[in-house]
Length: 386
Image (cartoon, rainbow, N blue to C red; front, top):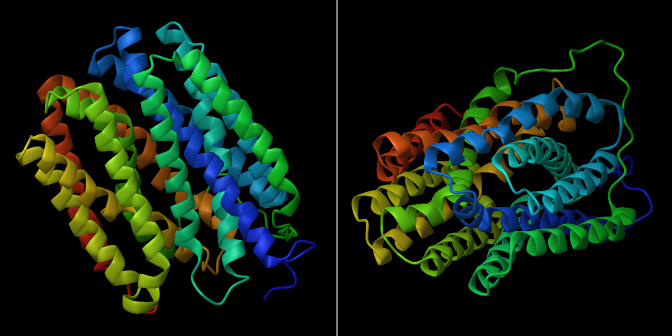
């Protein structure tokens, strides 16, 4: 156990506190994702218009990425994590009150910016907490994120079923999560910041060691957020189901992610990270191709389950590997790898909208299915000792 990292709280309490912040991140984001079809309908948007509006998220991320890198080099990730959590949930409250597309664009700029601060710092904390333990625990943190996502989707299903407007639903979630952030902060892990004598650029791309992991995470995040933003619309447009069935399909997807992440730590010790990443690429491609080639309710749900299993463990394991970089601190390494990987999370889903408008939503999902093969190819480039 590293005494340079550990301060007053016990390892157990630190682990619980970090898990709470993962819960906050998943619950709040899923609350937003569950209301995208409602917002699309209320604002009378087609797929291309919605895709254009969603582009505000990656713009906000890219604007904030150099700032995140700079802050993580000067302050403990716990401080940045609290700042990100409060800002992220404040912007979630504002999303509920957007009544016009231009308002939503402005709010999503702030939403994407604060999400970047929150997610990178939370994962930096997770990598540091992992170093307090001899066994793998990092995929379980992301399992907590998935449980929160499942809970947020379930709450969204209830809100949609009872016609509760987003301007009630989202502020209630945002305020509650801000309170939970303040409650958990005291037990988070303090990391003394090592001041760099050598001047480094504020914005840095992944080095040679990290680039292949960045590409793998890019594909996984692209697929994951495509499912968050478009799975409900896919069921409505391609499979012609009700909104309730579409939301239920998303819940099945979240269950698969959750199960995969809670099994991930055990599977790491049994078959190793490389084989997990290889099988993950197969599951992503297979699952999405099932949903595309068999556009019926049951096969599509099965495909979504396969896809959820595929994306479940890629990101936490890649971030864990990024933390082993010898050229920069774990926090800055995560900020660097996130430069590429979070672009997949935020840029690809809006592109899905433009492709769906031009060629159909099944074609756009088919392209995402093909991206799973990139994971398989990049895993073959990973050496056994990495």
